[in-house]
Image (cartoon, rainbow, N blue to C red; front, side):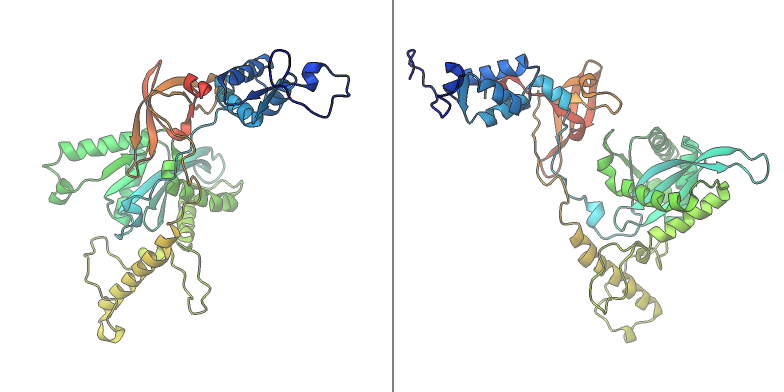
Amino acid sequence: MDENSLIRVGGRINSSNYSFEKKHPILLGSSHYLTRLLFVREHIRNFHAGPQLLLATLRETVWPINGRKLARSVVKHCETCARVRGETLLPKMGDLPTNRISVDFPFKSVGVDYAGPFYIMNRKGRGAKLVKCYLCVFICLRFKCVHLEAVSDLSKESYIMTFRRFVARRGKPAEVFSDNGRNFVAAAKELSNFLNQQNKSLSEFAAQEGINFKFIPVYAPHFGGIWEAGVKSAKYHIKRVMGNTHLTFEEFSTLMAQVEAILNSRPLCPMSSSPDDLLSLSPGHFLIGRPLSALPASSLEDLKETSLNRYARLEQIRQHFWRRWQREYISELQQRTKWKTSKVTLNVGDLVLIQEENNPPLNWRMGRVTQLFPGPDGVSRVAEVYTTKGYMRRPLVRLCRLPSSDQLQS
């Protein structure tokens, strides 16, 4: 105790030539608001020093109990430091939707994405010019079956023609998922308007059944991770085969068909170590032996093969693949590989920064959360933010929450 009744720290440096303040700093509790104010003052005075430097500076005059934890807390809740760090939120990985784990025909639920551009020749021979072309990837959400189409440009008309080719070969899907690319949105509006306006003149089948287009939130590619992975796998083979060669459009389409066959031969799940298991389950098993208008059949798995006719035996093989898909593949989807817990929660009224790709964090647009959109598991992954340019919806992985004044006092 000194003459002012302040508790000071004793120590082993009494014989040094340092000042009395240095040898016997004042003892402070880190839970008191005055101690936090001292940390905030030194943090700003030292040009937003980090936790280690901040604690070393404070220990010149005072000795805070549990000061390392308080230093980290002050740096974490500093608004300027939070803006420079630009750390976005990472909510818990969501549960798989029904169209990923329920049994149905291949390509009943489809994800679509584009890849490219790829440079090809407009014709063979001398005088040929290089033009751009693109790759449209259709992927089945249930069995990861892949359908690749070469597209000449990114117009709405090209996408509609590509989609018609896909429907003619794979059957009409019930729902199509994609990102918010302009060509996807325009094509969805045109097809929807056509089905609504020409409902009477279309055939009875087209009048009763339409295709449901669904779009993921903007700037949220992880919402469509299954087709992003399909694009990555397709480009893996294309880049190694094409290299720097320039193909014609016909040759490029042939290459797409061959890559598609390779991707549909990949195992859906890790192969077992059993010596009797000679065949791995692949997406190609679900593409062979099913007509586009196949009707559901009764279960034939428990019957003997000798008592079945040829069609029934084919139906039994198909149901065997489905049973293996349910037993082997679905169990692989049970585990969350990342984002196992929600690290930071977001509330209505919080001040956030909206992440922008080509700007540093200090130039990110600021806004305030007005609404949260929780999923079926109660975890919010999309928020509506009010900015100076109006309302916009962004995924939480694009939002950086700024600390509030209440957090500074806690």
